[in-house]
Image (cartoon, rainbow, N blue to C red; front, side, top):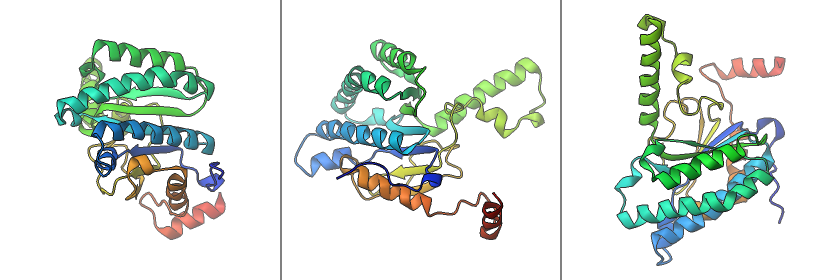
Length: 252
């Protein structure tokens, strides 16, 4: 069966953000260790990256490890860190081959020095790639992102002596970790849960939300295409009426 994207050409989301939920439950249902589910989740992530790149998506952001995930059992966290390192070591060649530029967003200072160096190395190696941008949200939290942006903006205000009333949304946005990419058009969460879970809180303000009962290791190309098709059939109004959007589209 062909896995080539069949989404409507002019309705491909520029930026897709995914919460990859359900790895542990997938493993538990098969009486396997949770970490085995995370390994299978890497395979699903690889499929999603390949599919989105072929579809013409400009940016794909995957929520790999939240700032709250440190609360998980120590054995699982250690296993995830080891898996993270392994993936970085194995996938760089493929990223370069397909011209995928990898970026990391999150508070990477909490990772080991070795992992931090590897992250910086992969970013540097793929920086000149001209294809899709792949953002990995690791030790990331939406509230953290907003706070660190505010802190940076306050420093700018202090240096330039700006009046607080002069602060605008674009001024804050340039300090968000995602400042270099467009805001997500499509947000996908697998695993049956219907919440954002502190992911890209500012950036998801006008994103189309898509929730799937499919556990992440089972989220294949067909499931991703269903999400894209659902997105293609939605009318994005951004505060306008449906008639206004229709008239604007007809004049485009």
